[in-house]
Image 1 (cartoon, rainbow, N blue to C red):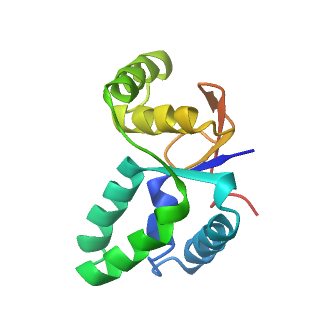
Image 2 (tube, rainbow, N blue to C red):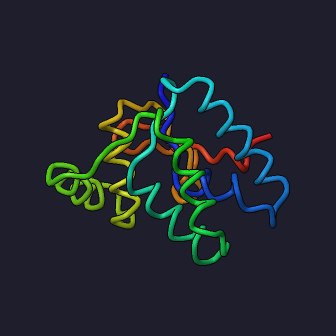
Length: 138
C-alpha cells in the first residue's frame, strides 16, 4: 500500500511550534526515508513546502535545499496537462479546492491507497483514495 504525503506533513517535520505535530511528522518522514517505495509526494507539495519554509518559517535557503535533497529518492509526481485536467475533474466531482484536487490527482497517479493530509475530510474517499489526518490519530 502506498501513502501519499501532503505539504503539511513536510512542513510540520521542520516546524517545532507544535511539538506533537512535529514529532508525528518527523516519525512519518523518517519512515518514508526508510521505506521509500511505500510513500509518494508531488512536486506541488515540495514547492508549497519550500514557500512556507522560506517565508513563514524563515528557514535559510541552504536549509530548505538540504531538506529537499532528502526527498530525492521518494516517488515524486510531476505536473503535466493531464494532471491539471484530472484536478479540474476532481474539483468538480468532490467540491474541493483546486489545489487539493491537484494533490488528489497526483496521489491517484502515484497509485496511493491513502492520502495523509489535514486539508480534506478524514475518512472520506477521493478518487478511491482514503484521506487520513495523521495528526488527529493517536
